[in-house]
Length: 70
Image (cartoon, rainbow, N blue to C red; front, top):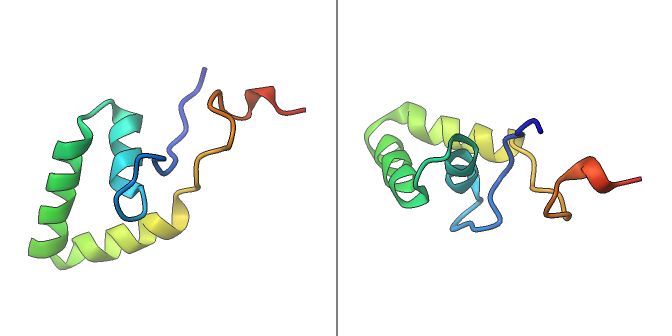
């Protein structure tokens, strides 16, 4: 089954960092800490976060993904 990057249902703000952590199999807390550091210490971090919040889709309603839709 192919993985797709989506926002996380377990979200704090928009679900971007949680979704990235789920996709790569990383710890969500460390991913959020690293992302927050990028946002506060680089101008690129905030721009990247806003772009990701717009571009990354929300998770599907089905826990199995889109494979069970008719």
